[in-house]
Length: 392
Image (cartoon, rainbow, N blue to C red; front, side):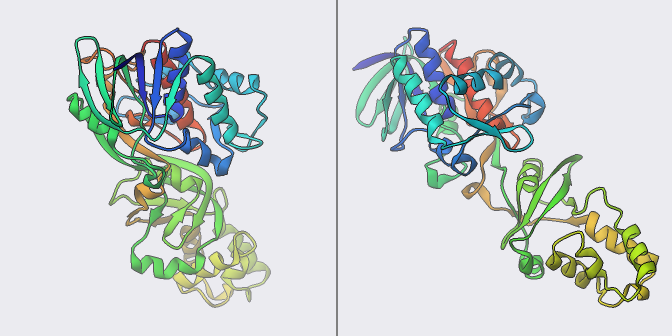
């Protein structure tokens, strides 16, 4: 039976970072993954260019039942540390918007960088390897890996959440937590498109493919980014962001011309030419199909001259105070991350080690720390992986 100082389950961003850091400390490290290739979420992220971090990353960009938990790891291994690593490898990158950093080339560059870091620090990587059994021993842990027994002093769980099952995502990390009697905060899809009921969809289907910059609010939280109408409901960055705060039964408020006094624009247009239609004026400020749909929904198909001020205010409300109750979300199938996870009260915030089980660590998405859209979740992976790598 082979023996290692550290075994890491999951060769994603967090797992690879942890393996590298443990290897730097002279630890013998094995990292395993049931997938045939490492870093699959890295590969597909950012349209294949990997939004590897965000220059504005801070604890305020993360959701958790314990919002203070992430402070230690994020402050000790920051976005600046990871950017320095990227630059050391000569990987060209750019800021797309709102501090989001992407590779100029391929996301594969980030994967190759991490693989080279692991190789340079003596980490052994085994792919297409299934963890069939885990047991605790007097010296640490014993694992049954695709028919082979392996022993280790430290075991790091970095196998992610349930999002995007076609990429191989499972709830295995939560099963390990259950085995060691650790509490798990309810999990749900996050950074995910929202869906509408059949009746609402029938009215909005003609708008599929139309995008607008919007303010979207729910539960006293709001985001200002693009919104996209789809065949199932609504998507786009602002919707993905708000989905982490939305719950079934909640209403969301949408402003499709934020900062614009639509009623005032309509009044001025009415004075200048009362024979214009509402949709004609709106179409100067938003996509024509959307302007037409709003006018039709309100039943304002005549001239502006036929509408009084109450009508004009109703148009303004339809544009900038659109309140709608989504029926659900597209689920883990398209969710970028999983909200919830291993209860952070079970973990040491400095090391990510389980307080009640010395030698057992949980890092990355499997933990109840979820970032906003825009590179924040990768930064949590790098930071939490680094933190565990200093102790495992």
